[in-house]
Structure formats: structure tokens, C-alpha cells
Length: 323
Picture 1 (cartoon, helix red, strand yellow):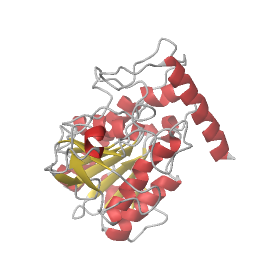
Picture 2 (cartoon, helix red, strand yellow):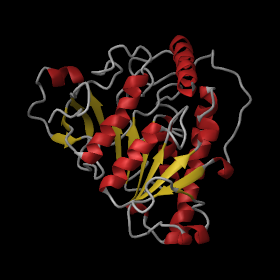
Picture 3 (cartoon, helix red, strand yellow):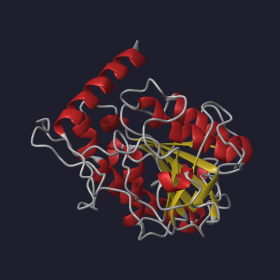
């Protein structure tokens, strides 16, 4: 029943934003509408963000962890000698979602890392998108300072930490990364949210410089996702829009939006998403970039030599990689 309710809310949201926002053809980001919903503004504090630690020793249950508390960290399975991966969910999501569990399981089935799930569902699970949107920057600030405390309490270097964020979570990651002066190893943006985000406002979104390297996968650009480049390297499977193979009846983009997560999970496990640098998807499909540099989309160890826009095609179902 909850999935049905959330699906209905998702439909209402897309209907409102599609009629109340316009896409700038030069920007392909979302412009804020004068018809924006009015609501009582709520602002995030440290109490509104929770962390759950998963490791190969504790794969299924996890530990609710205050990463600012040195004693709690010491008593937990957290190890400064392992890489740390943060995962941030998006709108209408929480720490027990199927997508989150799938990413966590994929990582820990292959890599011995500290997996920290960031739960900001106090705002992200709000039925009003604007409440979640307006708290992206405050949540990102809280996350950034919490990670600073984790570094102080454990001695782990920021270069051993990465953040993976889906939808609004990708922008939360961007804000946190700037609090940390771009020292994180990398940020993985999975179809960063588009509605209400603009190129002009860089305070509340993902951008190059949010980490040592920013890798972005676009799968529903121009509808739910942000189509314009946001990273050092941006990957556009099947053109990056909502008409993804396997999502032909996906009128409102939910299927395509979630594909970014499915692609990323497969990339962690197999690493087979070969993409080519190109000026546009049209040029890519016409073979004009067949001699251009190759890069692999996603993966745990990202291709930090990649710069610019990369395109590829996928299958309509798993395995998605065509290579």
C-alpha cells in the first residue's frame, strides 16, 4: 500500500512541476516557478540525520552510529584502515528502501569497506517535495561537519572516503563535499534531481570541485533528473533522458530515475559499462565519436582521467551493460 501511495504522490509531483516549471533550452536545468507550493519552512539540524554502519561482519542489521561520538565509533566495527562509503537516498526514500539495501549488499559482497547509510528521511520522506528540496543545503552542511568529526575521532583521511548520492541525495553530497573543501576521494551522483535546481545557484547542488573527482550518471535528465553536466565526467546512458530501454511506458520518469541505481550496482559488480567521449548523443549514435577516448561508467574505483561528457547504450534489462 505504501508503494501505491508514494507512486501517487510521485505522479502529483511530476504533474505540478511539469506544468509549473519550464526548461531553459540552454541550461536544461529546472527554473523555479512562481506557482511553487507554499508551506511552513522546516530546517534541518544534527538531530535530523542518522547514520547506520554496515560491514562484512554486520551485513544485514547494521549499527545506528553517532559518528561524532568517539566512544561509539571505537565500540563499533568501523575501521580507519578500510575505505568508507556513504550512501545518501533521495526523495520519498529512507534507510530501509530496496534500492539502498541493493547498493549496500553489492558493495559489501565485493569490497571490505565501512558502509555508512545516511538517513535524512525526516525531510526526504515528506510528501511535499519543496520541504525536501529546501533542506538539501542544511542536511549537506550537517553531513559535512559530521564527517569532519568522524575524521577527527578516527584519524581516517578524507581521501579514503567517497559519497554516493541518488537524486536529491546527490546534491546533499555536493554540499557536504564543499564543507570538506573538496577533499573526498570522489562523489558519485546518481541521476541528480532536476526540479527547482538551477545553474545559477551553486550553493545547494553538486558541482565540479565538490570532491577530488565528481562522477555523474544521468538517466532521467530534463524530467526528474538534471540533464546539464554537474561533474568532472558526466555519463549519459542512452542519451541520459527518460526514454530509457525497458522504461517505454515510463511517462513520469520513475523507472528511468531508478535505473541510475541499477546501472551503478551492476558497475560495482562487473565494471562493464564502456562509454565514449562525445559532444552529443546524436553524434555518438551516428558513429562520429568511434575514435574518441573510452571511459567506464560507475565502478568503485572511478576513472579519474575522464573529463567531459560520455555516452553509451545499454540493454533493456539486466545485465544492462552491452560490453
